[in-house]
Structure formats: C-alpha cells, structure tokens
Length: 110
Image (tube, rainbow, N blue to C red; front, side, top):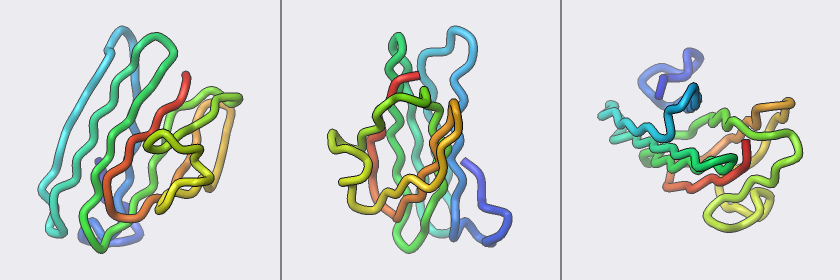
C-alpha cells in the first residue's frame, strides 16, 4: 500500500502484492486521511487471490502478479465485465488494473 507520487494525500493509491519464497499469504491495512485501505492476498499452488478495499473518493492502481495466459476474474466475473475495474496494461508476469473505490476480489493463476 503506497500513495501514488503524482497525487498527494492518498487520492490515488498503488497496490503491488509480491508473493515471494514460501510465503502463502499476507495482509495489511492503512488508515489514510481519506479512509482505511485494506489488502489481503493468498497463494494456493498456482492460484492467487487478492482482496482490496479502497476508500470513497479515491482510486488505485493494482499491479497483480499473473501468468500471461491466465484469466483474471473480479468477484467471480471476467475482468472485462467488472464494474469499477479496468485492465490497462499486461506484461508477461503482471497485469495492471485501475480500480475505483470499493471492495474487490481478484483471482488469477501465477
């Protein structure tokens, strides 16, 4: 959880989970001036789940670790059908998703 350097006061938030080694989950929160930001991720085998909560009147950039051929879902829907989440970039191992305020559940394979 980091503030976007181009937007002061956590108006824009950067979320970049990084599963490493044998770590299977992590969670954290931050009480920003705009409200509580929450993040939790869990890795089970090749499955990766990310839960994100972004406060009202803010947006976030999520950099989701993801295999290049993996389908990403948000709350059980294909990402392109999700309200408030939009895929903006894709590299071989990361998907960049712009999200509005709200609660999200992303799932993908690593």
